[in-house]
Structure formats: structure tokens, C-alpha cells
Image 1 (tube, helix red, strand yellow):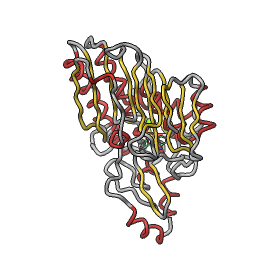
Image 2 (cartoon, rainbow, N blue to C red):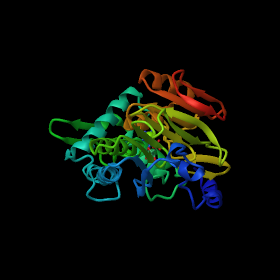
Image 3 (spheres, helix red, strand yellow):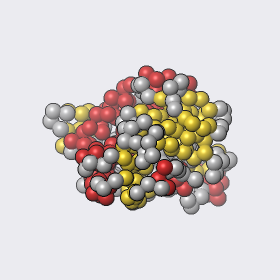
Image 4 (cartoon, rainbow, N blue to C red):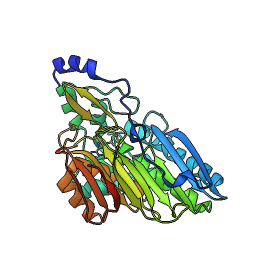
Length: 343
Ligand code: AMP
Ligand code: MG
């Protein structure tokens, strides 16, 4: 955070900071090769979302799924002045803002998991995310110490006040903001899942940039969906192949999704709200659960908590996790279904 480090970092800041897991070898759709499929990919919520569906209703289902995801994107994009997230930030310290039911649902989830994770998951971390330049469209960089401390003082999940009956949200102090980046993609994947199911699609895979996945039904040839997870340190290799049951979701947070290097150190977009610094105990944390929004939240929270506490937290939430720790060790929950592991 000193100026020397800042100038050194200039040479190390790569232009391509956004390296979604997909680009690094990605997630394989083993089953998709042969079946009659309809597949569409679209750039959405800062990542490439790909939906693959099978059968006669596939096309209508995929169209409806993308439309549902676009609606969530519009509510959560801080760069759109009219989004709920932008309106909430503008009214911080002034008064409550009426938000859409979906935004309220996301904020309520965020508040619940802020408590349950004892602050490891905190959407009010937004000012700190911005200080590091990790906001959408931002330029990742080392913040000055005073700048970081000022941002950290604006963080506090308890100062996000929700009135579900009135449909309003309020940030208690001026300068506060929320960043729904830790759960919005998962929430949108769940809305896509519902849209596909409503359209009568029996089998589909929704892949939100590799980091948020949910499957509908079974793959065309039956059995479980096999989802390959890119190794966070070895390009072109898999860390694990997950086996997902109908309806299950997989969320992954990793320090290679958005990061920069400075002074030989890696600085990633997952922030420990207790310190304002990038969390360092994990390299990658995947969580399998029943809902993509919750798997998304848990992967972020568990990443911050680190291997031991993260796996304990996942177990308390009846989810299963796989973590690649900063020590290079891979650990997982007892009930987790993986068919291959390549630590
Ligand atoms: P994900 O890739 O789903 O783990 O989400 C990472 C995104 O969540 C970051 O880009 C930030 O926008 C936001 N974020 C970072 N740290 C936290 C945290 N401790 N709690 C909640 N959201 C966070
Ligand atoms: Mg997440």
C-alpha cells in the first residue's frame, strides 16, 4: 500500500485481469457431445453465461432463461443509474429506497448469511472492493492505506436495514453501498432454472461463467451431470470432476477469477470484511447445494473463512464443499460427490 509498491505493480498488472475459469480450460460438458441440444451463450453480469438444454422445449426455455437473467442484471448493476443497487447507494445516509421484490430477496439472503457467516459474507464491503479497483469496469490496484481505512469504516452489514413489508432498503451511513457480486449471479442462475422448468424443459445445464452452475433434470444419457472444475494453478488441467444430482447447484470462488500481482504477491477480488484485505487462506472454494444463490454466497463466505472454518460452515448450512487451501492441500466435505480429483 506504499507508493513504491504501487509503481512496481504497474509492470505486473496484466491487461487481461478477468480470467474466468472457463477460459482456463473451463467446465466440460461431457454429455453434450451427442444429444440433440440447443445451446446459447451470452455475455451477461460480467461473464459468459452458457445455457444448454435438451428436447423440444429447449429453445423457448433458453430464451426465457436469458430474459430472466437480464432482469436480475438490470437490478444489480451498479453502473446503471436506475438500478436498485445504484439508487440504494445514492440514498445512503438519507433514507429508505423502494426496491424490486427480487432485489429485496437478494438483500434478505445477504443479510441472513451475513449473520450466519459472522460477517465473512458482507455485501456492504462495496467501498473496499472499489478501493481495490475490483468493482465492475474498475482497474485493480493497490489502494493507499488511508483510502483503504476510510473505505473499511463504511463497511457494516448491520447498517443495511431492510423493511420487507414496506419493500424498502436503507443504508444507515452516507458513503455506504452494496455489492451484490457475491450472490447475484447465483440468484440469476436460479431464476434461469425456474424459467427453464416453467417452459417444460426436462434437462438443462446453466453455466454462469464457470463460477455458478445449476443443472435441471438429468443429462440426456441419464446418471449424474459431470462438471469439470478447472485447476486454479495449472492451466488446462482439472482439479476435480463433480457429480451433480437433478436440481443441484455448484458455486466456486477462486483467486484466479479476478486478481492482479504486485511485488510478487497476488491480490484477488475476495475481500475479508474484517481487514479490508484480500482473503488469503484459500485458493479456491467450491460449494454444492440445492440453490445457486446459496452456493454462490457460501463459496464466497467459505473462501474468506478458509479451509477449516469454511468446511465447518458449509456443513452447518447442509452444503458440501471442496477447498484448495493456500497450503496447496485439497480438502472436502464427507458427502461431496466427485468422480476424479487431481490436487
Ligand atoms: P464470487 O466470485 O461469487 O465469490 O464473488 C466475488 C465478488 O463478491 C467480488 O467481486 C465482490 O464484488 C464481492 N465480494 C468480495 N468479497 C466479499 C465478501 N466478503 N462478502 C460479500 N461479497 C464479497
Ligand atoms: Mg459467490
